[in-house]
Image (cartoon, rainbow, N blue to C red; front, side, top):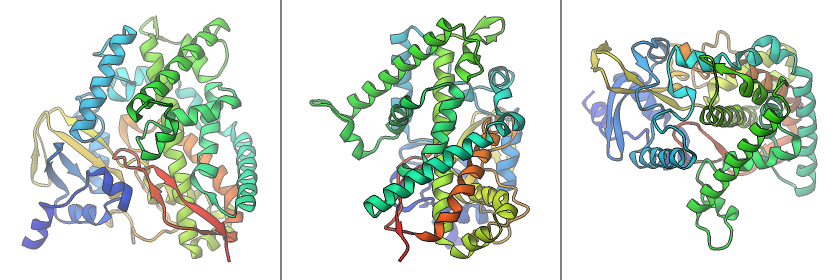
Length: 433
């Protein structure tokens, strides 16, 4: 036990370079779940927090929306330098645009009733019935994107599961929901892509421009595009059923949404609407190629196993790594006292590998039932796009699965250094020998 406790003092679950080079820190999360499920994580470079790693505890914290809130000043765990730069940039932007710097960037930073007042504005578009009505269109997109992927594979000899395939359906779907024309989709992908600082983004710099200036320029272009999109909807009367029109004509407490609120909402919908689902799609494809027995099961019974495959992909990939919450009162958990004002980090991938909740959690099983994963969170902040993400993944795997036995992985998976989502950067494939 002493040796294991000494290991606790040196574990690292926050350094983003490790996430890029090694993937998720499964061994560290296993240790925490085993001997320190509520662990005061104090390391240089990141503000301390309680690490919550067991399935039951992550669920309990997520659903206790009075004791653990989003609006306590820390929504996502990140290193102190990132936090400092993020909030400084947000203040400068708010001042430049005449916005209120005290208002959060988007409604995810808030709690009930404010959170629900904003969430309900677009909630009808994300119901199971509304999403079911888009099923045929998603299947059509998926077929076209798979055809394009195969063409690239045959032409180049290799293709990228991430950029050439997985990014396309989530991007197309959320853009259509926003009423964005197809000729703008690729530019939106570029804008969301540079939200994650990567060395190879130097290619987007113009002469004499460093990477920081490039990112500021592209984000201002996105800002201007959103302004133009809002104005176009207003000029058209905002009477359409696309989400931008819905937001433009919506009211909050009897008043139209401000420009600041509209910007925050639109950026949130576009970014959240494609980043996490693309990573689940790409990660799930890789998992099937790495587990040929499970691929064969799915191909033999696609109608019977498609839904359980989607749920297992969500559990296995866990695209959202963590959220932070702030305690509003003292609470005891596993003998540890979390004080009012303390921050806690809830780690979804760890919860989704908890042997207390999942038999053989490190076995990828396309027929796993039950599958009480927490990929979409729980409680008041349960993911708004849950039904949309599931529908996209069903369409994607329905079309992709039949071709996967013709493919094999070509090289290692490349990841992006990030602590909130687990973005995959590149995974090449080739025709199976």
